[in-house]
Amino acid sequence: MNTTEMSTLAVLMRAPQQLELKRLALTPPGSGDVVVDIAYSGISTGTERLLWTGKMPSFPGMGYPLVPGYESVGTVVDAGAASTMRAGDKVFVPGARCFGDVRGLFGGAASRVVIPGEKAIRIDSTLSESGVLLALAATAQHALGDGNAPELIVGHGVLGRLIARLVIANGSDAPVVWETNADRRSGAEGYDVVDPETDVRRDYKTICDVSGDASILDTLIGRLARGGEIILAGFYSDRVAFDFPPAFMREARIRAAAEWKPQDLEHVLNAISDGRLSLDGLITHRSAAAEADNAYRVAFGDPACLKMVLDWRNIQ
Image (cartoon, rainbow, N blue to C red):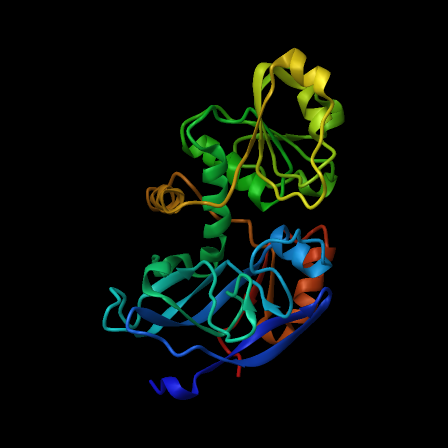
């Protein structure tokens, strides 16, 4: 492969709500790097929505223009001598930083990427487009951690569904899921989805919130059993606060779940491999990568869209 002239078509956010498909030069790969042609990438309605709206809190590396995306799958087309990968390997790509002066935040929404070989994760080719869900599935497993499985999950988007499926796959009792949008209450597999207004329980031992609603803590604390825990598994752009007396009375514990770790992804891949975890029914929308601008608007604006996938296979 001629590494001196490598380039890629990538989703470029120039500024909030300013998106285009642009050809960018790629950083030449080193001996430990792999070059991956991306087949599919997912659009995150959590983190990427905040980048799109401009509400992403400031953190190191934040800024525009940027290439988003951390939910990509593709095929290794070239591997450095120091890499354990080989051309033809099917891999999950959790993002890339290979676009020169353009920030890769998170850098997976491109037709081709260059990443360190250890960042590419081999996957079964049968996963196909469903492989884009691996980051969310690993995030779901990380939220569960080693503690008590949640008895209540707040939000029936893709992450909420994956957490509910993993609770069952891990051998715990089926949780209850709250969802205020009636159109999103369908699609449950082995658990109940209810309107929170109809739920009278106030003794949940563990509640997992994936709503992203920073104002919801007071409501959830009021539903806890004494000594109960609330897991914050969403990403919150606004200040998270709560009234102290009700939390004091219940000796409430609040835990923020951060990024997934390699062992979380390994757990998920094992659960998929042995049939305990299904990724079926979670991808609802698909778009050619050439129509990325409209795809992002649908992903963030259409409540019926659980997961939008960009197809990069025929991009020129």
